Amino acid sequence: MDLFTLAALLGLVTGGIALDSYMHPRTLIVHVVPSSDNGLNKDFVTNVVNYEIDRMTSVRSLIARPHIDPSDDKGFIGALGDATGTAAFLNVIGLVFQDTPNRLNVATYTEGGKLTVFMSGLAANLPRGHGLFNMTVTQQDGEPQVETIGRATIFGAANIDPYLAMMYLLTALDRTGEERFGATAIAIADVARKEVPANATSVLLARLQNVEGLIQLRRGKLDLASAAFASGLIRVPAGYGGPTQVLLQLNKAFVDVARNNTDDAAVLLAQVTESTDDFRKLVGAGYLSSEGVAYTLTQEEVGDLRAARDTISAYIALRRNKVDEAEAIVKKELLDDPRRLGAIAVLADIDGMRGNQSGERALSDSAIELSPALNPFLEIALFHAKLSFTADAVSVAPSQYILR
Image 1 (cartoon, rainbow, N blue to C red):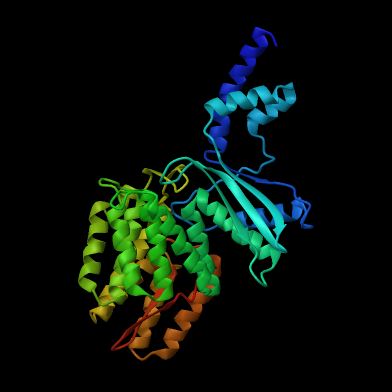
Image 2: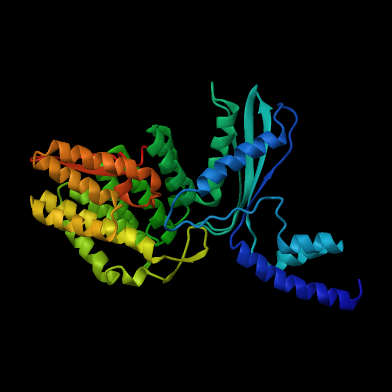
């Protein structure tokens, strides 16, 4: 290769690295190792692994921006190397200057008559920093092979992005009610906590504890949910102005209402309103996702947070027997967006408190009919649980919308 050709290639590589970094800001490359001793072909294992990861990355989130780069997607650098016959050379240059992507390697084999999945990889965005990991997952008695591979995929992904894995397990708990999903998610948070000093601040840990609180809420364990949200707020670094703190404050306020602590709930909502300038500061500001990818919140996304604040304000008013005030809050919310399920649920409760069972039923039915068209952000407590008000009691139940 002459100097002119080398200089031209280096120039193209420089531009290609910038292009690849823009197109794939933080990639997860999945590689399935062929195996023949257990009858499972590579395509079968690959399909199961990719299906599980696709479901994981489709979780509707305010602060996760996952991106998966399939192992056969070479990007600009790989395509240039193939076209010029210099793939090995360009790959070395690319690795020197380009951020190392997360990697997940999957191999299956049989041991003791049971399917065993070996997971290894590189995690580039964890509380402890970069790190290699490996683990094995063995088929449980009576467990189908598909479920073993799927379970192993979740564990492997949790080593790379514990937040996204916990969010996915939360949706599985919502969908099925099976406690094993919640227990696995809590275990992921416990492992992450052990990787940093006990009193250290960390946006990622704060986010994990927010999901932990939502899981405890879904379980109906309000004291544990409140403690998780409070611990998450302590983890938020001083001066951080992103949505994580707002989510924790809103969710703790929701639990405070359920525990009949309306004063603390009202204080939290006031703090949210003041610190965000009634949510205006959140629109368009730059943040980092759970994967370390830069993003901004849109007006619509911030509107969902504001709507959660308003609905919780209405719950506080109901707790204080200010029914007319609660009704005014949610009716104003519905003028801004008639699809707000939380506001509709409050109106249904108000009709029930007034003895209008037919109106309560009609509103609840309309919300259920509307809910399949909506795709809520699952960091918000309102979408995992609902408060039902009567004249003398408040009960917490799983959301009738998320379970559809």
